[in-house]
Length: 199
Image (cartoon, rainbow, N blue to C red; front, side):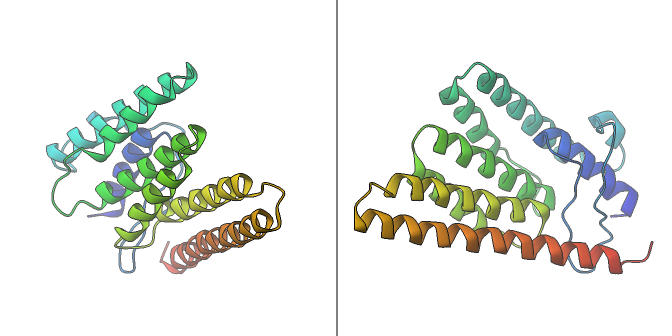
C-alpha cells in the first residue's frame, strides 16, 4: 500500500478511535506518523481500500462515538457495551487496521472497567490485547500505558495500611513503571524507524 493510501487509512482509523491520526509502523512499511487537522471520511478513501475495510472502520467509529456519548452522561455500563461491540467487528482478513482498532478499543475498555471498580477484568482486557499483538505500533504502546494505569489502580486498592497491603501496593507500582517503560521503548523505536526512512 502506498504511503498516501496508508496515511488516509490512518486518518480514518484515528476518526474511528477519536485519537491523533497516527498509523502503525512495521519494519519495511512505508507508513508515516501523521497528524491531520481534518479527519478522513469514508468517501475520502473510496478507491484506495476495500469496501469491507471502509465499512468496518465506519462501524468502529460509530460505536466509539456511542461510547463517548454514554460516557458524557455517566452511563459507563452502556459505554462499556458499545466499546465491546468494536471488538466484535469483522475486519478483512489480514488488515493491520483491525489490530490497531482492537488495541485502541481494549485500552478504552480497560479504562471504563477501572472506573467501574473491575480492575482485574481491566487487566485481563489489556493483557489479551498485548498477547494478540503481531507488531509494534502506537496503539500497542498505548495499551502498555493503560496497563500501567491499571497497575496503579491495583496499587491503590492494595494499600490498606497493613504491611502486606503496602508491600502489594509497592509491587503493583513497580509493575506500573515497567509497563510505562515498555510503552516508552516502543514509541522510541517507532520514532527512530520513522526518522530513518527516506523523506
